[in-house]
Image 1: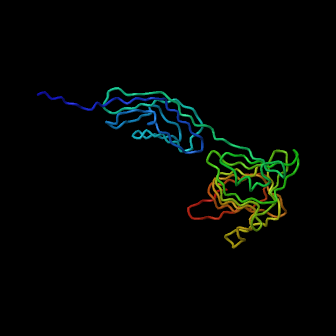
Image 2 (image 1 turned 90 degrees about the horizontal axis):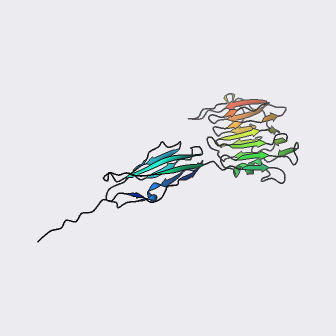
Image 3 (image 1 turned 30 degrees about the vertical axis):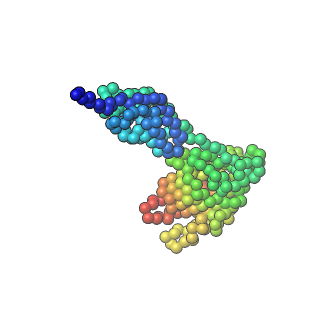
Length: 272
């Protein structure tokens, strides 16, 4: 009587289609290379991207998952994917591109009429990283005065701040208040605020906190977020104060009459 030994063959993996990972700048996402690979599963696969990945991209060789963390700049790069079952001598490979699309940004108009919003406050609440918010007068060279005041709680991103500005040539003012005598109060990070904007109104002068001065609601601008830029200018018979308790904030606007104050909090360093 004869015997026949039957063994399972370990077939070489195949790449059935070309990977086409596409990411959007500023949005974290993943892409599975395994969706393009067929294998019998006898042994574990090892995935390799031969060429160097760009900023913000990482690759798991065991799972074949490509991860984009949202921080890498827009680009289109060529790469080579290799797949091996660790037994067959031939490594399957294919060329493919990784695409990171540029951040989609929008310009939002703030105006008394005919714009997207009638106040900077409402426009900032609806903004996303990279957006530009521009105040405009009814006619070029005219005046728009935002009487609402601004509370900002929406963050921009590193490299993609939310920009809040006035149209060049117009007189764009924020004279409304949101608390006490405060024109602008923000807890947001990564805002570029105030180019061609005039902060004008009844804000009181500030007093150094170390000497038992006024509360934060007596400040013209309360800057509690971090990594922000404050531009623009102030106009008032009194000094205007900035309550700055965030890290890496820059106050660089021309023409300020200001008393810049820092309230140190645990783990944060004020920088002006």
